[in-house]
Length: 594
Ligand code: GLY
Image (tube, rainbow, N blue to C red; front, top):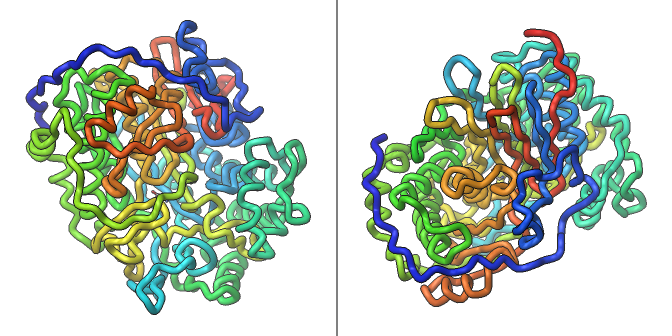
């Protein structure tokens, strides 16, 4: 991919970036950590409520950052025992299925981008699939409206891919015995302490979980969330994990666990059959590669839209060198105009590459990006034709973990059951939640899903098809081709823009990684045609200036939960976003040479 011609960004009158004070909204006790943001500039600390709040760790022998400190500790312990990045990733994946039931899972799916210290970068697609009995209009009522069944209950579940995915990555790259990697999760399932963040999360989900007896029994105490500090034991999940530990994927896609999944489907009117489970297989794919200001970024290819959309955004923005200052209306304007165009293409063109032709070359073409950039008016918003859209949900789950081992192998994994607590259905007797990933299809092409995304025919439902995703597990190399950064986040469509922000904040704005993760984010997804910004994350005069340029500005809650690792001269810096209480953990014992 050739470098673009630089487009002059015309600086406007200088303006002061005046972040406003807001209360800390989502910080729980889990946010404290071994090192607290040592590089936050003291004169600015406190200006935006999240500055200085990231949980960070430093290490020389590896690093794990995930959505839950307990899971990161599990991964760090595997690294300390001499496991590599994939061993740790597998152990973290299973641990998250226990301690982060909102998003960690064995009943969902996900993506891995893996860069071994030597050898080619590869991507593993273990996304869920539509059951064989799925039909294009299965979620439409008699009037053609999308029903609630797309997000809650049995019909919303795609065929899970996580166990097969973790098995495939271990089979290809793992070095420690499989059972050793599942063992920490089994122990956690026998009982772990619920922290404040997770207690609050369960309280929010209690009304949904209460609709399904097995979910209420597993996660609630007399219909209420377990109190912070109380022990959550998940005995059925421990049994399921033991079957997986002993039999690998056969312990999930066959045998007693498969029988329980199919029985649950029959009880609740779901579609997944034994045949669906037995035939599920993950797929190794070539990653998306993007050049950005001398750096190389590897990210997830379709069926994720993440890598292609991130790449298109970066290819367009690379033409302004340098970008306007962080926090300025000029920057947010260029970002929003670029995101709008990139998401328009994402929404209409991307789908499962095994079913539809995805014009990857268009997203990856510098000429195409140059053409989009030429259409951007630096003074005025360029609206899209209006489409009727419902307001998207603010809470967008999924979870990401980043791992680097002492040999420099890097694993970037994003996994999901879609909504928080998926479709809210726990498989009775098996102790795990199912996904509601069917809502990531365009249940009614041209009409919005729960994230307000309006997508096209390429993402219509079909039997055996994978649903479009925004998950963007990514790995960044520095201009010398050395590992520089591992990054990803949850957040529905904001995943793509949050990963963009983390990368651009480091490369374009020279931020330290903790500051890059903490800093306020903006998001545009084409439809609804508006800029979402984190409430109080933009100064009032900046919001006014953007409105003057024709943007519809919508302030809302915090966005994303980035888990990132930066390779520094002195070692590895792990940063867990303060937005949802994740954790960074480094192995504290060197382990055996491996
Ligand atoms: N379920 C969120 C995503 O895959 O983008």
